[in-house]
Amino acid sequence: MTGRRRVVVTGMGLVSAVGIGVEETWEALIAGRSGVRPIASSDAASLPIGIGAQVTGFAVQTYVANRKIVKLLCKGEAYGLAAAKMALESAGAVPEEMNPARGGVYLGCTKETGPPERLFAGVRAALDESNRVDVCKFGVEGAKHIHPLCLVEGLPNACLYYISEAFHLQGANSNIITSGAASAHAIGEAFRAIQHGESDYVVAGGFDSWVDWLSLAGVRALGLLSTRNHEPAKACRPFDRTRDGSVLGEGAGILLLEALDHARARGAKIHAELVGYATTTDAYKILTPRPDGVSLAAAISGALADAAIVPDEVDYVNAYGSGTILGDKTETLAIKTALGKHAHGIPVSSIKPVVGHLVGASGAVELIASVLAIERGRIPPTINYAHPDPVCDLDYVPNKARDASVDVALSISRGFGGQNVALVARAFAG
Image 1 (cartoon, helix red, strand yellow):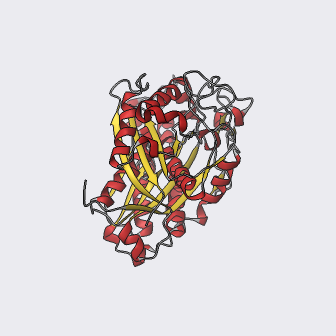
Image 2 (cartoon, rainbow, N blue to C red; image 1 turned 90 degrees about the vertical axis):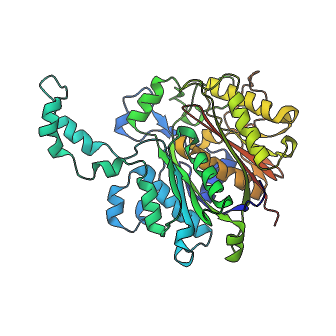
Image 3 (cartoon, helix red, strand yellow; image 1 turned 120 degrees about the vertical axis):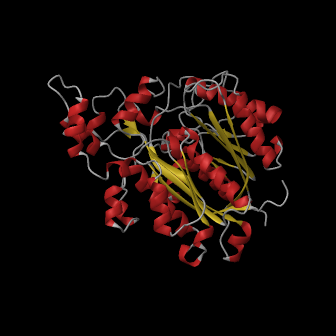
């Protein structure tokens, strides 16, 4: 399409199990230092899955001054709000000096993220002598124990409000819930909003926290988590023949996207340009990707076409690389289908063994890693790769970071329900 505005990345914020901020996280990614460790929670002590990528050393008060808001925030929302503040500050952006009506917020997460304790208090009050919930008793007695802010704490779009209010952003906004593809979808839609003139600048990305007993139990029941409790840092091993599943994590990734003319007008530093976005759906099974990878390949091809880039121009692929047996196999097939004969000559890596599977935040954190690879000329490795798999036969940058000139990077995201997203970033050329 002609006449579309160019979209650039001017700010980035990260909260992860290996660092609070972009620099700490990037250093760990390049060093291949995993943030996966035994879970520090009594909730998970009795579960067969006792490992995860938990955020440590995070103080929400550093990023949120409003005490009333702090009391309402769940962990994921706190990470998202902090990452947004980092992104704006790193971009030198002062929302009060920009047109609030032209500033947007697009976020991705996966579920109701609020703590359920206050709701559970009502459920406990309604238990009968057989330890079952008495519906009539719940309506009379249980309701008395439910805090009036219970629903606010559980709203998936609450963080959309918190960020909009904190930074006076009154323009286009959206909250997207498409599982592991959520934040990539949010970034892609923000990209479109700027391209087509709906916004001049957008805070875009995602947050999530899946290191809790309910998430661990649920995903374990699906058989998608690694059971290597005895060696946490080596548990997630994407594309390796011995892979046995993901490791859940928590964190947030937020980018400040701007129209090029808007960024230039305020003298902003430009880290990279976002040039392509496409999304498809498998329409196959809610928890299983299409075995042939065709729909994911279509998203990759669509994003490259949107960016007017051909496969041999791609210098790096940041893979979804979840470490599941079928997921890694079908992603490899999709990359080979979309990139053709060039697929075997392009470095492909997954950062999930370092930061964990961040689910709704994955796409944003992985796009930030892709932008940093472009800007700094280094490709983060896929750690824990030791046993080649005949069905996963690409260059996965095993175990050691690689110096490389990266002009074009492709970032791939997937989600339960068969959602696929591909984003393309390239070095800013003026």
